[in-house]
Image 1 (cartoon, one colour):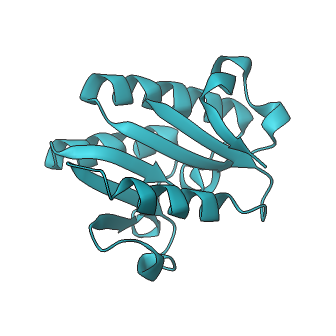
Image 2: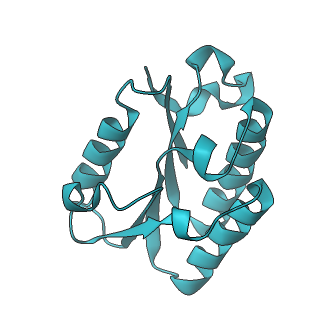
Length: 139
C-alpha cells in the first residue's frame, strides 16, 4: 500500500511522517526503513527504525532512485514498511515525475508487500487524480 503526505514546503509534512513511523513501530513485526536527505531526524526516530541518509548516494534521476529502492529491498526481505521524506528533492522530481515514481512504488509495494509512506512538497491540487486516493494528509 502507498500513502502520501503532501503539501507546500514548510507545512509540517516531516512531523506527520515521524509521528506515523514512531506510532507504527509499536505494532510492526518486520523491519522499517526511513529514507531522508540527512541524519537530522535520527534522534526523533525509534531506534528500531533504520535511517538511510540518501544524500550519500547522489541520484541523478528517478530511475536511479527506483533502482536504489530495489537494492534496499533485495538486501532485507523482512522490510514491512518504508518511509520516504522529501521525495521530490531526493529523486529530483517534477510533478509528472512524482506521478510516475509513485505509480512505480505502488507496484513495488504490492509486489513485495511493503507499506510505503511518502512525503512530498507538492501542492495537493497538483496531485494526479490517479493518486488522490492515496493521500492521507494534505497540508
